[in-house]
Image 1 (cartoon, rainbow, N blue to C red):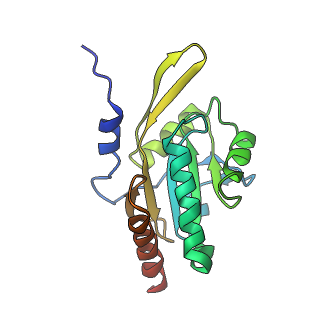
Image 2: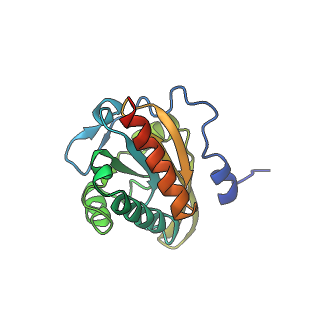
Length: 183
């Protein structure tokens, strides 16, 4: 009997068991025109979210919420990067990601690699994803929906659920920025 993970089970898998090694060992093309690696992201705290542009609900909601949280942080958010990693590289080209992310915030960075690179970054963040049921050419993707909080050293600081209340999301982002300011 083959067990297919449910979306709820994938959400439960979003929290890394240990912070050691989270976010290490990946390299993907980005909407900035360069390859993004953990080293390239060091120097500023960042948020990372897995998703795909054809997502009917979770991804646009999460990106919209992040856009609002960034706006609420004001000048404090200037040092914060937001990275969106597609789990559907077959449909989400760099050009398509750039256009899509521009609807939320032009500063958001999109990553889209080949299947191997996508699996590599998902493993680096202990994220999961799987192609959902297909109807003709249409299909969905099940995926981890946590917003990863990474510090300027590239170390895992924590995560916040995309479904968290705005105040909880804002507290998490402020905690990350406050920890950076205290260094």
